[in-house]
Length: 408
Ligand code: ADP
Ligand code: ASP
Ligand code: MG
Image 1 (cartoon, rainbow, N blue to C red):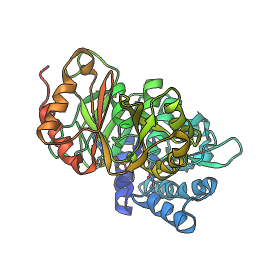
Image 2: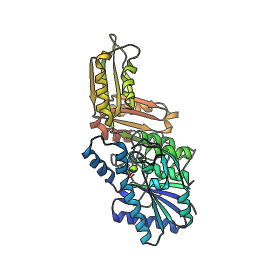
Image 3: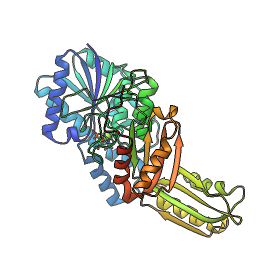
């Protein structure tokens, strides 16, 4: 007998029928003798709908009130799932984040979990109940409701699994595992049996939204066995694990991409110390995160400086830099929101040279211009025009033969 934490995403609880289906699955696991804690998301589309209501009142709504609003979606699904479980004779009890007491910091809309009180849950499990917890939410020290950022129910699931020392955390979703790339973009994408925490973390942070980044961080830190599976079909899914010798001998594990990028270029600034700070200092003072940065080699005493930010921060960042144009002595400032970042991820890169050149050659053959490049030990990212996203991903998938399992 094991303790399993299962998280069901928005599509998996997207209708009353689907909630009943989840109840049946949970009862099936109980029938095998397992203790089950379930975390659910809001019904698909609900969080977006709630955000839309808030924005209809104020484009930049008060963050505390926004969290009060958007946490309601998950309160609906915990109650409905418990009703369905009870109807079929399975005792169950629902808890909001505050009721469990999932303590977070006070960063509304992007709060971090600090501590979880597992007492109620343990006592319910001991009495044979299934415990159903609202994902994506918590409460701060002053009892304000907080939310954990989009996709945050994954993190609730993993954090609960860590706190309860569960045997496994299972993320049930609308795909049957983690693929070499998003199967919606590349139908030839292949499901991975296993992927390392390190690679999954890179994939998530470079844009693969199948798991929220923080859930992977948590799982790695507390060594929670984490599995991604389909709600709608049987299978073993993908296990996210520590690296070991039996892993597939792949050079590249996957391709991540992000459409959430925008680029700002400052042209003709004097090439002297302090320019990078002059531009980026003001941007980071506004709490805007800068991703990639490129400064050209200076010519005639001037240089060009390009950086990327999240698309949501684009207007503000552009305004800030434009406001500094005179002070910086810049000739021109341009912005472009029609760019994307495509990244190759794989621990195999550590021991193999030539991956970057193969990547650049494949893109060049399709006439895809690379605007920016950034690398780390296990990833190479390029910024390209948005219109080339699908072509770029498919080209790289093909060039690195990701549709085929690597030879062992
Ligand atoms: P849920 O609502 O269950 O949390 P999400 O929409 O957050 O589901 O995540 C599942 C989706 O992630 C899939 O439908 C798929 O389109 C997308 N996705 C992106 N990259 C990948 C990948 N590498 N492998 C699998 N799915 C991916
Ligand atoms: N409902 C939240 C969202 O849509 C949290 C989640 O589904 O993980 O982002
Ligand atoms: Mg999700």
